[in-house]
Length: 316
Image (tube, rainbow, N blue to C red; front, side, top):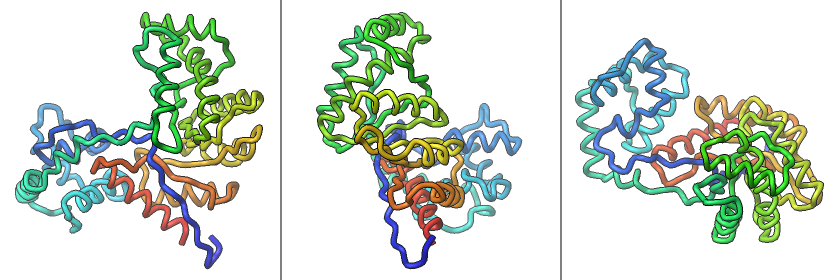
């Protein structure tokens, strides 16, 4: 990065799912998520049938084998963020630490923090609405009721197709009967009125495409041809983010298409820094935006800190 150049990468609240637990009674419920339990499996531990304390205790015992992993980095970040514990834990007494953390959970009422939900800004693209018209109305109502300046959409599992109302309607009827084979048709058809409304209200559209580069490309082409593409920020997974930045971002039909990136499972501060440096080779870094980790869930606050640290490392 050029010396003396100050770059600001804003972090927005999108695509994040807050912790769903509403009552936290012990550290395992709060700290040992599915990624950490999978890491225990990789370390040769079968946690089936274990109590929460046993899982926590064996996780601490295996910490030395996790050096350099995102799981270890996140665990330490959560320990500091939630409990103020920043010392090395490789050789700590698990009983003493468990007792200390349980007391903190009870005294500081961390369990209440976990019951909060992040503001809902992700379009409810699929729901139990009785018919296709009702589904469109539901999403338009959501757009119009949003107090944010953007709404988010996840098309990572959608093969965007050009469709019409009749075929979209038939696909949605089939979906309600349990046949999901036409999901792409009704979602693609539904996006037209939604994008039209978003553009009318001058909202930004945040689109997460995962590794699904082709759907993002087809969606941008389709809507830009019709002049209804809102200002759009594309978020993608690591394998296609460079391609998104170099090929999809720019100006399309009077709307700007910009690039963003996410904290993803498996990311460390160092890997985030490397992503940013890679993107910066083809994309103006001052226009980059980071998303996916800012919520009022305490466990996501730790990911937020790792994201910020990665950004700082990249900009040094």
